[in-house]
Image (cartoon, helix red, strand yellow):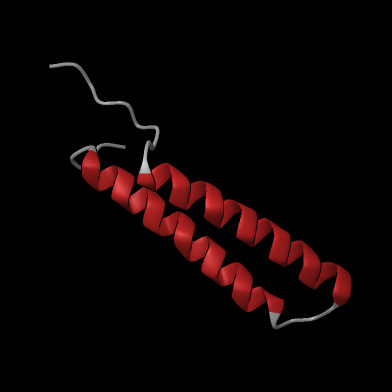
Length: 64
């Protein structure tokens, strides 16, 4: 039995990359503008990343 790759593919990859872009953009915008409500948008990006990694781990049978 060969080990499954731990890199996300398909929908998990889309979730991780989208979450990364949202989190990075909104957290930098919050830093530059001083608008603290943008950190809530960053939290959504972090949650998308978490969902993508969890889905990827579930597809790999819990392997990391």
